[in-house]
Length: 134
Image (cartoon, rainbow, N blue to C red; front, side, top):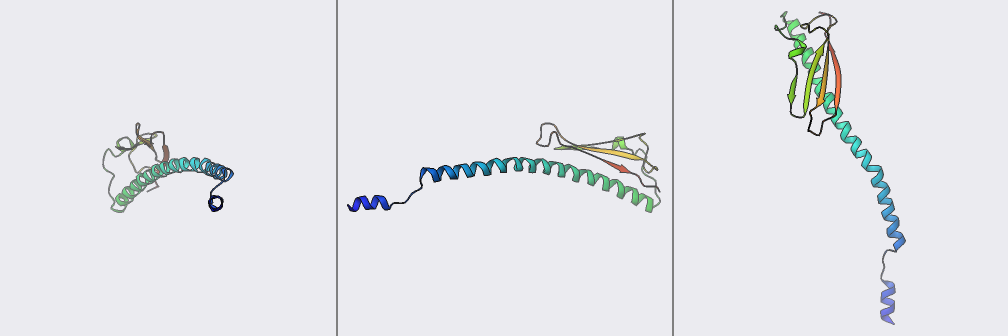
């Protein structure tokens, strides 16, 4: 008789409780996984935007420094020779007439692309640098 009572007093989860927990975990996973992948893509775009902002700031600082010192921009400094390939990212620059900065209404289009065969492949951000009037 004591053995029967001992078995009945042992607690455990019922099959329904276990199934309910599995269903809840499945729902949570279905909601969390897409958000995780979106976060990765958002991080790639944010990185590319940061690189783009760095180039835009660099152009503005160089232009400002030269204007303050009343110096000319180095010969050949045009959009065609601005660009780099640094591992996961490729930066290219195009302009409407390859004019040397500074020029009024001069616009450079800067594109940051994820390099092929890297986790960033397929990510692309484009921005502009407009030379201010001297």
